[in-house]
Length: 389
Image (cartoon, rainbow, N blue to C red; front, side, top):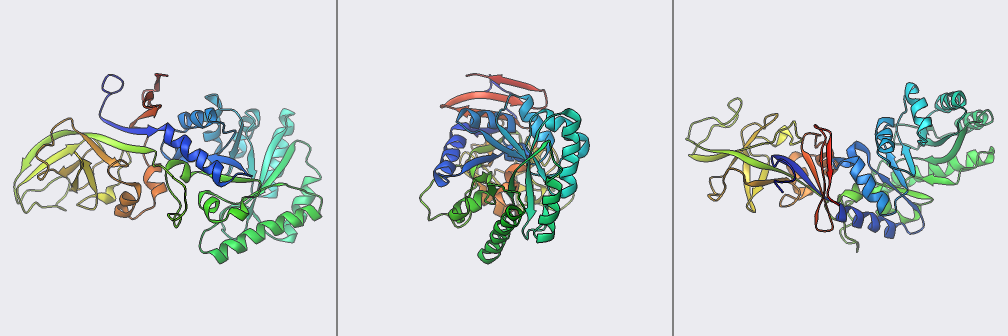
């Protein structure tokens, strides 16, 4: 691989596994549209290349969090629906409408703002209406008074195509989930009774996809499952969900440290034994969290676990390789994925798997594998992409 990219710190991404996970989602929701959620740089994988691979596999519907994520996809040739699930700032509405992005309205004022922006361009804008069914994050209130307000606003709309109604499960417990689902269905009925008929209704994410098959309705929004984050409590179910990335770095130096010496910043870790310490070309600036300092995290070298020693720095970190005599400068180290499963890593960091992969920064080179070979190398910092297909 050295002839294809600078081997320092990188992320290996398996597009074949990504596509297999997408097909699993299709199998799990055979009667619904599968919208692939690729927000936060496709959970750290690189949104553009992931979208292109999914589009090639037949996906025609994507979702992101903000308009800038949507515009990035459009500018790299991604077609089909791109739904922005969060707020679209008023100054960005013109660009959004011009790029045929589907927007989310979380208030009556949002609908009116979108109408005004679309009218100024003499263009139609597709809009989904977000309902707060009890999660209390975004969306219109779920009540008859709000249904009245929406219906009155809809009478004035000429350029807004109100296409759907959706919400998001809090996933607290089944009773709360059922209450939220009931609320969404009630809002759909209240609106229909007032002449606003919306057939595109959706509430399931990756967990809802697996846990509540009767609630798939017109579509499901699948994010985490695409990237190998298998929903909790689905281990007994007969489907595969493959982890799609391995975060890797190299050993830059190995040195001997004596008992009583301190490794790294501060005096958090004073050695009580003679140790062989390896410095790695990675830190929290790359997405390896500082909370894994001082023995809370481990890495894999030659298939063996090496404990983090001292504080994780922004650009470097140290691990104990005293028990791995074969370790040497230039060796590959698995940080997340590969020999360090997502769940194991997330448990060490006291977080969830989504955060573990999504916080990976732009600095590591992304290396995409497909059909058993390297297909693309993407260096975001240099703005370079090389395809080998």
